[in-house]
Length: 255
Image (cartoon, rainbow, N blue to C red; front, side, top):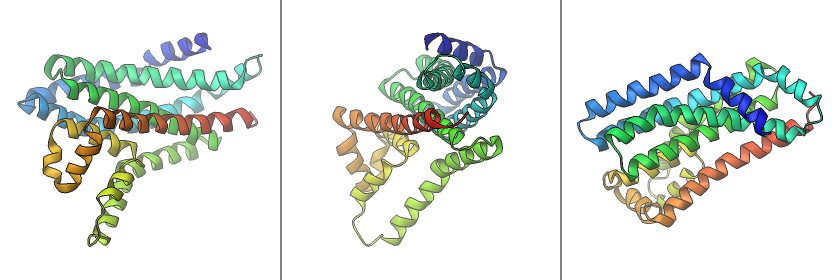
């Protein structure tokens, strides 16, 4: 399993798309910190960039890689190697390489210009988001063998979590504005890893003061060390559920 992970990892980090992704994040991060005026403004601008581009690149690249590696996986399946090990090796190789690109592209500027606990939370959020959307990409890939359909499902998942979900939440809040929905809003946040990551970082930037009573509720529940642990625990759950589901489908499907 370690040999397969190393092979996948080294193969991906030499990919021109991953190198361009790293360079893009590095240049944009340095630019945002220099234009922001203060580390907090730079981190806030970088947060919006991370939550938009990292899920998109992760889910599209991972889906494409899975389909391009199908013949390689068929060869491994023909060997006396457990399917679970093959699948997890592919997943960990892709997720770790993309996370490494993210940490290199964003982590260096954060370390140089905005080293703080908030910067650390930003990096952890980005790594979790990468692992989550690679897991969702693999789930979309094992559902269908058609590459076009798989990429289409992956893009729909990204579109849903990045844009549509927020619209649904806003519609619910507007439609039931006469009722106290603070606790419901907090619960709805747990169903979207992108929003969950955003709130983790925003609470440490004290932006919650601009969010009214709901922001105060977020601060009281997620602002403590226990609350941060709970939030990252939910992100971990978002990693495990699609990974275990896709691994189960991959183990039973006909190659």
